[in-house]
Image 1 (cartoon, rainbow, N blue to C red):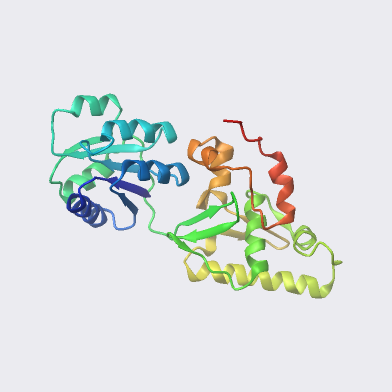
Image 2: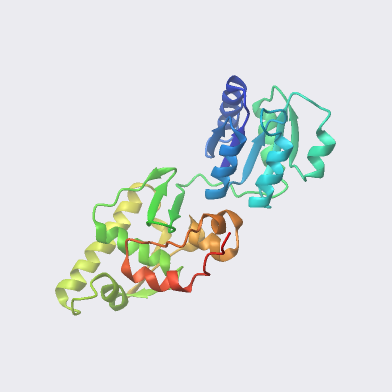
Length: 265
């Protein structure tokens, strides 16, 4: 669950973030004092919930909510404010809740349990994959460290295939395109698969890889990925695409060619 909290008053923002953390310890919380920074972030990262103050310098919470809804229509908006008179305006924006400061843990929990667009709360490690630009992987907001470059490339190719089962022969042809199939290459591939599963196991995410006798695939519903969201039409992913896809891998050029061209602005 990704949550953003926006309030231009430092102490109020810190208090809100601490209360949210206590109410939902497993959430990833990103705080902003500038509404434009929150918009930029939401444009790059899928956000489930936004806790917004209403009276802020430069942009009101109501205006910010509209822009966040333009990026992701399913984002849950929860206003946290010291003013009661904007409640009707808030609910016209289909806000999930309207809380008066100061808020406590019980109020936050109640809001999270009664979201307009429910979010599955999961305590497991969260893998977030970025394909646009360079291929990068994050676990709970931190970069995932791969022991080998080829292990990372293997994971990149499984991501590119979007859950399709990949045979050992296919993987060898992609990862070692200039070398023939051989016993040593098959041994190298088995070592890479072991290394990948071991890397994911260390962060509690080994179950996102499905290994059968002669195939391997990625469990796509267990990860967040800008490429997957782009194909689903989510605006934050569409807006984040700049014409580059896994640019460190030559085989990714085929997918790049299949993506819609950038529209001239």
